[in-house]
Image (tube, rainbow, N blue to C red; front, top):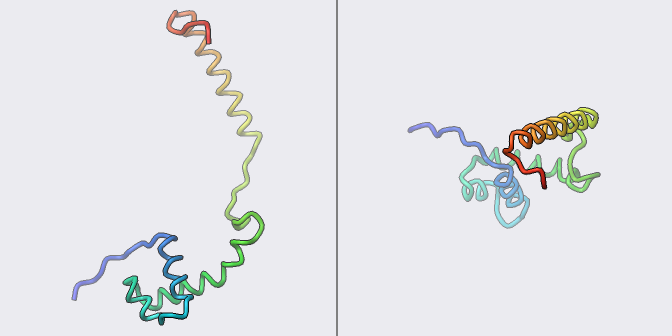
Length: 103
């Protein structure tokens, strides 16, 4: 019997399988057979859905740990640097006759 290669399932697929397992119309084994995954995996995804379902309706819809902090000062400095570069290049191209003075 040949070994099956490792598969990576998308979060959407996992959610679909877990929601199918939550319904009471099929057993875990039937859901696993339908989606061609192991019953233990279906049980794990179902457990994760139950544990994290409250996070969906929490503040902002996403866990606070997942959102990295943004340093606004660094972004403003980058914008300023790019504005200076654009002004410099615009002036140089205008002097060279490669860019018209009117915008």
